[in-house]
Image (cartoon, rainbow, N blue to C red; front, side, top):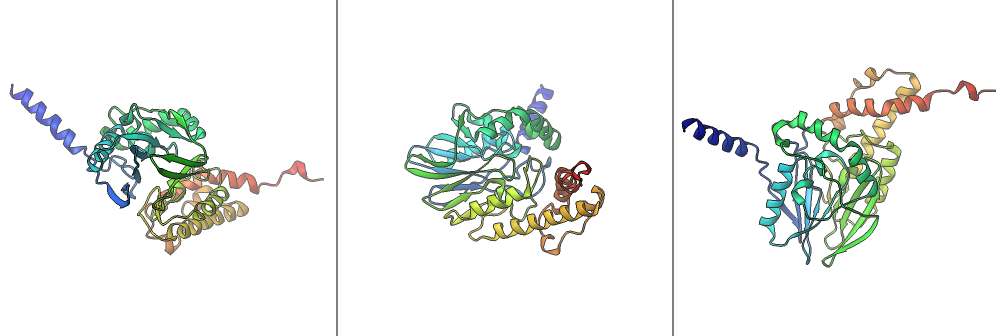
Amino acid sequence: MRWILFLLALGTGFAQALDYHLQPRQIAEGVWLLEGSTDNFAADNGGNIVNVGFIETADGVVVIDTGPSRRYGEALRRSIEKATSKPVVRVLLTHHHPDHVLGNQAFAGVPIAALPETTRLLAEQGDAMAENMYRLVGDWMRGTEVVLPTEEVQEGTLEIGGRRLQLAALRGHTGADLAILDERTGVLFASDILFYQRALTTPNSPGLDVWLADLDQLEALPWKQIVPGHGPLTTDAAPFAQMRDYLGWLDGLLRQGAEQGAEMNELIRAPIPERFAQVSLSRYELIRSVSHLYPRYERNAMVRVDANP
């Protein structure tokens, strides 16, 4: 009997230890934010490094991304129930990366919508990304499985319960990135097109030039507050300025390296400008970006011998 009580107590302690302690913050009329850490995935944060939001409409709640695990998604749903008595009527996924979509299981029975290419990428890469999350954050991922979107959305205006949401279909981060502007309050959920005070990630980017063009389109929207995919909420254009500065520096570093025939291991040790010193994970993400992007720059710098007369 003592052993049974001990095991029950142990299980209860385990469950309590793996608590995301989500605290939604109301940032505008009917708009809520759950702000994640700017750290990397780790066992002590359960992968909670992402900004997730929800918007209350007359018909119910629209959720923007579901977080990194089934456990997170369940905690998110409980948080929504505490904030509002209205049901969840729609989930919008900004892109297919695991920290944004692996909480989908908690929203069974709710339409989950995404850009068509996001659904394709999640079907193609989701299982491998989930396995990697298990390796990175361990027991937080227990019971987590990939759940695909059930609906498609396109760029344009989506109206739910009297709330008009502008949907922007972008490409710079993954090839399929959805940004969402709540017209009533001017809150812009910028997805991972915007990182702020946290170095950007590039594993699926079609190119830094594409990303820079997305920033122009996004900044032109009539926003009043910006929720970046990662980093603090802002009411000014600082995230756009920092992103353009960082992308320009990274592009120049890779381009010059390719022109000079530099080795990849030289570039990952390149000095990081002082203005980015306080940006979280700058060195870590530089190493990853060089490995993801530099081969493309090297190919572009090569002279084709068969093109010469």
